[in-house]
Length: 259
Figure 1 (cartoon, rainbow, N blue to C red):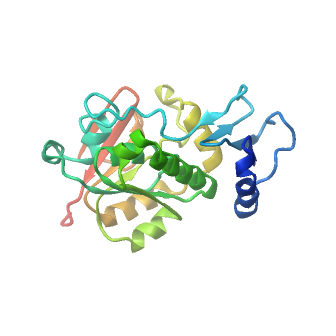
Figure 2 (spheres, rainbow, N blue to C red):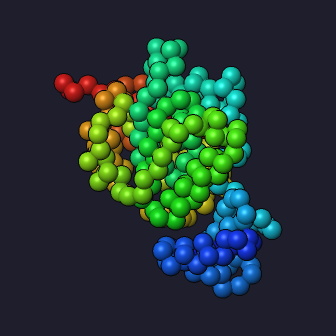
């Protein structure tokens, strides 16, 4: 059953925005102060958005990029972290080369933001209109934050639409990145954190991942990277190689047009 998605605001300055979003996205006003079972509530504050569920206590979950460690040495945006190693080869990491990357399953945009902070040029695609609103809100907040803006630059943009359709008409890019990790899995080490749980509830049933993979392979000129839970089966058999951590694994499919 799809959740009831409601929206409210603690900011008097955003009441008009709330009314517009209720109309444009088909969202409802909260039926009561407490979040009901089966309800997901978006709460607009002065400078950020929180997402609440029935398990939220007092506050919701902030879904922007404010908690990302933007240090380039040992922080999240180091090119030598797993994600950086997955999207670019050693030579590109050493020289600092920028790759054009499509994140075709953007979600809340965490990985897309980190890739942009690493210096890559990112187009983030999200098909769900509510999730895309949250993604756009996160990008706008980062643009207005001096530290986050300096790290991200102008290298992250979002598109709302179906990834397969957009990929079919998009110019070729170096890398297409796919993250179907919010799909239901029985692997115990992949139990999702709160943000991933909320993303799964908002997104609903995922589309055919193999169709998306094929579309990604048709547009990437260097590689397609698929993020999986460590221990899960590859989305498509026989990746060329993988980069693994304790929780996540990145399966890498190199582009060889002759095969």
